Every structure is written in structure tokens, then in C-alpha cells.
Amino acid sequence: KFMIGEFKSDLVGVITVGDPNIISLCNENSIPCLHYDDESKIVDFLNLENVDLCVLAWWPKIISENLITVPKFGFINTHNSLLPHNRGTHPHFWAIIENLPYGVTLHQVDGGIDTGKIVAQRQIKYGWEDNSGTIYEKSLLEMISLFEDAYPALREDGIIGVEQGDYGSFHWGRELDDASSIDLD
Image (tube, rainbow, N blue to C red; front, side):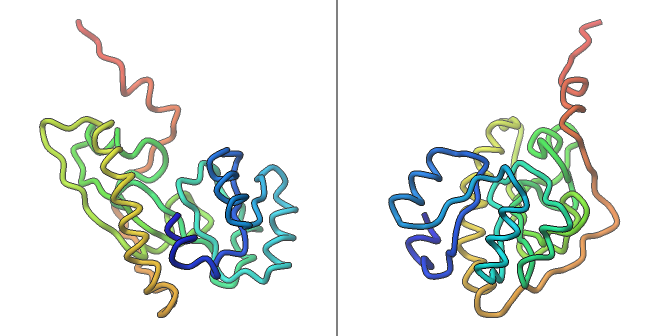
């Protein structure tokens, strides 16, 4: 909605995994909307439109290196963690379990998972009254705010990323069940 309201001319299309709200919004605003089911169609579209930058907003899939290189300036990803802490899935859960700082990050997409250069970040403070659900909800709002603040500068000045530190953590989704169980004995 922000891009349509403020920078509609920057949008050449939207790619979705099938979210009906996104599809409706695109149709209402005459923005081409592609379904991410065939990567070759996406590559063809990006090449045809001579795309400069792609933004992944809460994107649930890993982007192939073949696709990453198509846009002139690559891809920027939104991630709800304070990278390099909690790369991968369920970062809101792991921040609390591991007692790590939490926040939101815009980062460049590279061949790894959430390992690209950091473009912008904001820390989200949490306390004893929070759980992974409450900090996740905070991150939804904060990510939108971070993107709204960062996009005009990205547009004008280009992408200036900072390498992530050698510290941090990574978690797969399959780790969640074991970490969520409590042994009362």
C-alpha cells in the first residue's frame, strides 16, 4: 500500500505466492501480478521489464542465485530479526529462547539464508511481559515503518550495505518442536 500510494511509478509488478489480498490490491491498481510457481516466468518478466531492484516483503521462499542476479541491484529482503542474530525461521521465538536482541532488518539477498549485507535495522525492545507472539506483532508494524523510512534513501542514494558480523545464529523451522517442548520431570 505504501509503494502504491507514494511510489507507484516504481512498481513494474508484484510477485506473490498466491496471497488473495495482494492479488486484489494489484488488480485494483492495474499492477501486473505474477504467481511464483515457475521461476523461469519470473526471470523472463524481470528481464523484459529491465528491473533494477526487487523487494521481498515477508517472502516465504529461498530465492535461487539464478534469480538473484537478474535485477540490476539484486534483491532486498525484509527479515524480522536483528541480523546477524536469528537468521532463518521463527526469529521471534529464538530471540526469547536465546535471550538475544530482537528487531527488524532490511538486507541484501545473497546466496546464503539471511546473510546479505545489512541495509537498515531497528531494534525492538522486549521484556518479561512479552512472548514470541507479541514481539512478532511488534515486528510487523516496525518492518513497515523501517521500509517506509529506508526506501526513499535507497531510491535516491542506492543500496549501501554493511557486512554482517561473524557472530549470530541460524535456525531451521524443524528445530521449533524440540525447543518448544517442556519436560515436567
